[in-house]
Amino acid sequence: MNLNVLALPGDGIGVEVTREAVRVLRHVAQKWNHSLSLTEGLIGGIAIHQTGAPLPEETLRLASEARATLMGAVGLPEFDNAPPDQRPEKGLLGLRQALGVYANLRPVRAWRSQLDSSPLKNHLVEGVDLLIVRELTGGIYYGQPRGIFDDASGTRAVNTMTYTRLEIDRVTRRAFELARTRRKKVTSVDKSNVLENSQLWRRVVTEAAPDYPDVALDHMLVDNCAMQLILNPRRFDVILTENMFGDILSDEGAVLAGSIGMLPSASLGDEGGLYEPVHGSAPDIAGQEKANPLGAIGSVAAMLEYTFGLIEESCAVDAAIQAVLAHGPVTADLRPPGAPATTAQVGEAVCAAIG
View 1 (cartoon, rainbow, N blue to C red):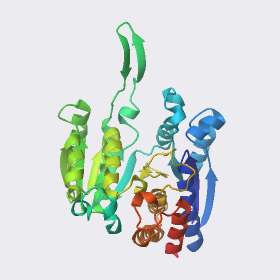
View 2 (view 1 turned 120 degrees about the vertical axis):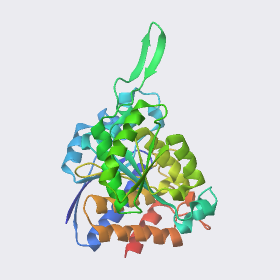
View 3 (view 1 turned 30 degrees about the vertical axis):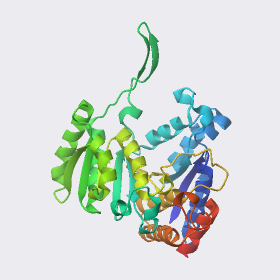
View 4 (view 1 turned 90 degrees about the vertical axis):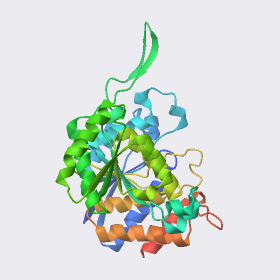
C-alpha cells in the first residue's frame, strides 16, 4: 500500500515527538513492504513566523492531497496576547474544519506497568480502558457571533455555542459504531439541566439509540462525569460529548494514564483523518529531548488502523508501546526507576520492539 501522509510538526515539542512518530511510521512501512509518500508542512507559530498565517494555503493544499495528516502540537507563549486570528491554535481549528474531521477519538488506557505513574490510587485506575468521542467541528469553538466588543455599556466578550441536528447525529452514530467493537456502552455527556444546546444534544442521541439495540446508552451531566472519571473511571466504555466538554474531559483522562504525553488521538470525517497527540507544545522543555513521544507514536497506530485499514501493523505498534512501557526506556514524566530516556531513545526502542 502507498501511505500518503502529511507531517505537520508544529511548535515546541511537536517537532521532537513528530520526528519519532515518523521514525516508527518509516519502520513499519519498511517491515511490511509499504511505500511511504511523506511531505512536511507548516502550521501554528512557526507558520506565522515564516508566512504570516497560522494555516498557510500551501498547508491546506498538502492536507487535501494527503490521505492522512500527522500533527505535533501548536502554541508559543509569544502569541498569548495576539488577536484570535493570529494565534497558533487558529491554524489547528482551521485545519480540522477544512478536513471535515468531526469525530475526535481519544483513547485512555491505564497500562499495568504504569499504574504508579498516575497520582490516583492503583485500585482506581487499574483496568481503565475508555474512549472519548468528542465532536470536533461545531460548538462554542466555531459558533458565530464571537469576539470582544466595546459599546456604550463597556467592553464585553461573546462566544456562541451552536449545534445542528446533523452535527450531533453523525458523531453520535460514529460513537455507537465504535462501541459495538468494544464493550457496547455509550455514556452521552451534556449539560442539559441548564443549556438548550445540550437539550437538543440529548434528544438527538436518544433518538439515534434504537438503531443500535446491542449498545447500552446512559446520559450524564458533564460536572458529574468529571467527578466519576476520578472516582470510578472503570464504569466508562465510550464517552460521547460535544467539543468543549470533550476537550476538558480528555485532558482529565490523562491523569488516569499517568501522563498527558501518553494519549494519542484520531480525528475522523468521511475521508482521511488527522492524527495528533493530545498534549500541548510545552515550550519550556522544547529542544531538550525530554518530551514523551508515545502519544504521537500511538497516533501513528491509530492512523494505520482508521485511515489505511492496516490492523496487523497498528497492533504491532501498540504492542511495541506496551513493551517499552513495561521494560523501558521511558521519559521522565513516567517516573522511571533509573535515569530517564530521551525522546529519541524511546522512539528507537519502539522500533526495536516492533522488530
